[in-house]
Length: 300
Image: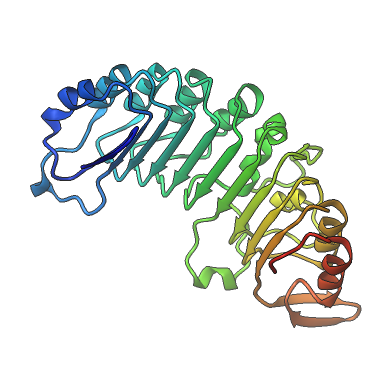
């Protein structure tokens, strides 16, 4: 355990029975991190739903919570966080029992939530109700989703008007290193069912990792963001399949405030006239467009 100012970090080695007394000693805590990385049965019990409920009632000023490798917390525990009326930031790392139902209860009950991070949460299935609710009624400014098998890029098109409020978005698809050399279609893909007339003019920080799209459609997935983020300052594209020069040209013409761009590209087969060429999706034309249209670019 370590405590610094309004922050307290808990993990293996702390007797779980001591938590209520501990929380009562620090009612003014703003930030709590609970991390059971490397935990083994011999390390004692983990925090569970009941003790998370105690936390939610004991810390009225809590606005930032991180739960990592908490295998005893499920949707019932997550629902208790609706008691945290000031909760603004929640990070869930490797919490296998959390499902879409728990996220929906969180979206409905936590009205002040502005930052949500989901990493390696294997229990989240393909339901998009929580995303739809956050998009329509929430106030998210930061959404980060990494390595969650049940969440695909096309699910985020259900976020709807939420894109207008978002300032930071990261999506890292769960794939092995070798899978980036295949063009496996995203399981969330359904042809001719999506709308791309979404507004995301407030987005400043965008990172997409290991996603597959079709160069010429009909569904372009999260590539639609590249030509719409007028406020974008930082962009990272890592092994995004299906990119073409037109994407970067459109981005350079729209994102005049771009300051940093990171591109991790892999070569693919592209039809050029009557020939098939093995190259990266971006050519010198993309770099020229960035040089001409992005005067604030500092890092490439």
